[in-house]
Length: 78
Image (cartoon, rainbow, N blue to C red; front, side):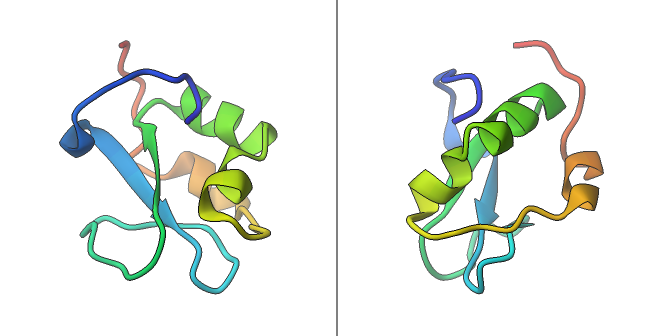
């Protein structure tokens, strides 16, 4: 979503917002629609800035500030 990179699903981080609050789905089993982004903080920030989470999840989404510092978001290069 953020960078448009194609990758295996296991290499991506899944996010859900069943109640409108975006959260990481570490187990990848939360019900409902999920949105995937690669594990780079820059990709997460780009997706957040472009409202990609809201479009993909088909709902208004609130993104907590602490989510951008989630340890699952690492500084790996593509």
